[in-house]
Amino acid sequence: MKRSMRILATALVAAACTVTVSSCGTAANKPTAGEIDVRTLDVGKYPIEPLDINADQEPGTLDWSQAGSVQMAEVVATPDQVDPKLIYNAGEYQSESFTAAVPKQILGDSDLLGPILQRDHMYFGFTTTGLDKASNDFSDYHWPALSSPGKGLAISVMQFGTEDDAKRAATDLYNARFDTYHDQNQPVPLPKYPDAHAQWQPGVASLEAFLPHGRYVTVAMVATPTADLGALTALAQQTFDVQQPLLDTRKLISDMDAVRLPLDPDYLLSRTLNPEQSESPSFDDVNLAVGAHTYLHYTMDRHASRTVLDALGATAVARTDAAVVVKARDTATAKKAVTEHLSTRPNGAPADAPPRVPDSACMEYPNSSSSRYTCMVAYRQYVGYVQAGQLTDAQQRAAAQYALLANSQWE
Image 1 (tube, rainbow, N blue to C red):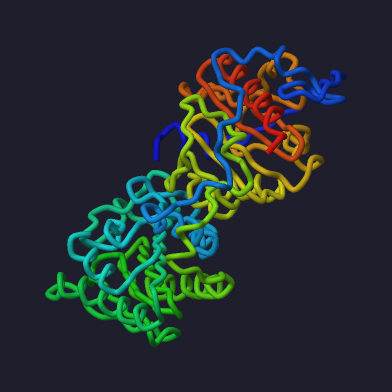
Image 2: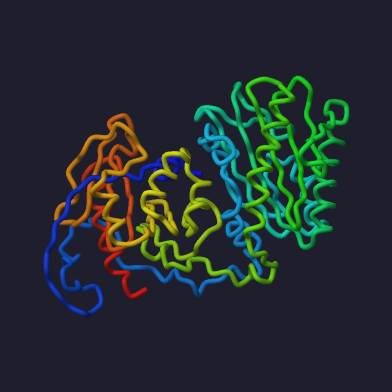
């Protein structure tokens, strides 16, 4: 995940400034009654015409697994749902989708596990991580532990072709890890989950547990401040307590269903500032259109981001290298982002809003050079967020984002 996008993911800020300019027209790019003519705004070098990114695009036979993995992320718990202190995303092990051919490093050696996942017919995989300290991280993918004492959790969820595939995979994955460290690891029973396969290294403050559930396998890699087996076992069981019921709420899809998944059903990427003019949705944390819960997996401070998204009644979020656009519950709720000064970044000071842009605001954060200014705009049920190191640049980005939203109403 790029550092700029990590900051932007937690930069949903707002302040109040509303201007109403009346005009009318029906041609493309012209204002409707009660709206400004966006052609008069100072948008600098930034594009304001929507790209052809829409619901007609499908993953096809090349990207079906990643598309299905991102879709599955809507029912993958964020670690702060397990423990409210686990609000920070891990760096190297940041949340993302993965495929059977290239599993996440936190699961183990991909050369060893990849063939297992392919043999056991894994369809989709998604990993999310959470820490109680922003400065901490999981280290050493062979047997993960935190780089400094603290609490951490990585949840990996995989869907397999059949229930038998999932049961076999849970055992195979556990055995592969155990066989690698047979002279160091010990099996650990989880009293609440007798079907789980768990192990730890005595003296190391981490534990790994595999639990099949229908066609799913959930892997919990848990870490505690000390090598306390009781605390590790409790955190693993607490993870399954939260995660397993969520899986039952999802409508299962097959590999063929994933081939036809819509990549941008709400046309959000078309509405999001995109200076690189990339027309292809991705399955990573950038150039992505997802549900509000899935978006939380990619944010660096989930508590702050959840607070803002809940206040907006967010139903979907899109992000590019340059902006984040949130689809709010309705127009009135979107405007609240401005009038109520919602912010996930503390200690900001009001800065000049973009000239002539209705429902817009900017905030200054002197301690952040590359993202010193964050601006937001509200247009109908959408809220857009941009940032830059210079105020003029941030204002132009905000004006361009507003104009792009106005020019996207045909979608």
